[in-house]
Length: 153
Image (cartoon, rainbow, N blue to C red; front, side, top):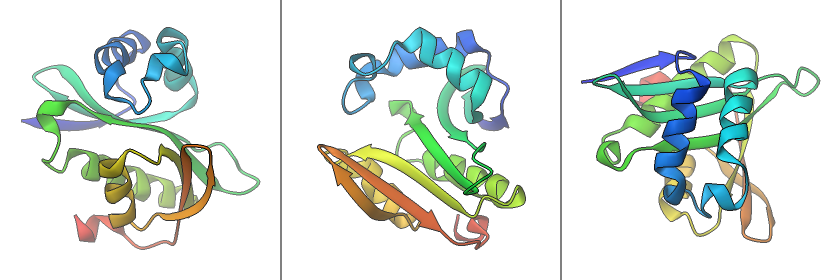
């Protein structure tokens, strides 16, 4: 049974999750960042919405909610283990994030996704994200509004 939590994973647990899921990212995560340093950065600076099953971290949506000038949240990472994909876990984690962001006054969020990651793009579009711009292989998508996303879950 999947349990949903916020900010309970240690940097070491996030690190292990990232290393195990490295090849699931498009492009491969380790080709862009050092997974060890990235895990520490996410633990220290992001709000991490987590999915756990049998004591193992199997999904994370990491969000920076620290730009108080624009009140725009930024999502640097969405990743769910293959065994939980297609079961609504990423959608639930995104709903949890959206509701937490609204509660803090962040009514807009932005993310970057590889233009070839069609499954992620479909998820984001279904949640109301729209293409804002493109740089190389990256799409930058933005979601604006204050609806209670949980009602659509």
